[in-house]
Amino acid sequence: MSANASSDLFLSLEKLDLPNAYIYPAFLSGLLTYIFIMFCNLLVLVAIAASKKLHKPMFILLFNLPINDMITATAFFPHFVLSIVTKRRLIPPPACITQAFLVHLCGTGNLLILSAMAYDRYVAICRPLRYNAVMTPHNLVKIIILIWFISFSLIFTLIMLVAQFKLCRTNIVDLYCNNPSLVKLVCEDTRVNNYYGILTIFIVMGGSFLIVMYTYAQILYTCLKTNQSDARKKAIQTCGSHLAVFLILQINTTFTLAAHRIKNASPYIRRALGVSVLIFPPILDPIIYGLKITELKQAIVKFLGRSFKS
Image (tube, rainbow, N blue to C red; front, side, top):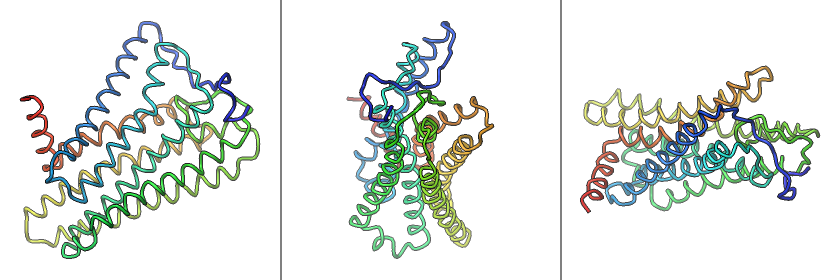
């Protein structure tokens, strides 16, 4: 059975095995979580778009993060929530390939966006006199295009490498479609997939980790040298929220990938980690940024105030 097989063929996702008494509470929890994610991220998007004060490089880069998070949530939650009620954990191969592509695309995009935001803060704090020359609108557009181009190119190749194979199994050992689970359905030689997967991890996770750690080390050094306590406090507050979001995603992704690579890893831990990567970042990103970045928080409060008055 090929990954682009006809629509009457289905792959079977891991069963939830929920008792009947828990089906509707689980459905409601999943639905409310999805609505909450969409609302919070949409609120950040609208607040940035509506406030001219936030039309700065840092917030324009940040604008891409809620878009990324909403795509992630939409790739996972609708099918997952519906399957809770229907108890039908089947998915057509084309839909499975699409879901895997979107999940990995957004995971990659998330790390690259956070890396670009770290670079923006590095230039703003460590090279303030060069900031306007470096972070021009033209350069900003190039950075954003590069983020999405790299993400799309790497993940499209990753998914196409597995989509070319005929699948000899139909049971996906996960709650959603992803590359490691799809590769396990192939009975042919998948060494190229494994090598390319490791290369992608090295480029995306390794590269973003080096960029973020270097830039924030430089930022911390600069902040400790400055005599202006207000500037130091504001810089640490802004960068602290960026670093918290990045580390949450990086650590979560690392454990999830490790769980797929370790053959003796508990399937329950693997499933929990896999789902947490899709749930926690989209929930925590808007909350952390909305609460920690004063300018964004003020814009959100102002927007909500206008909305309730009208």
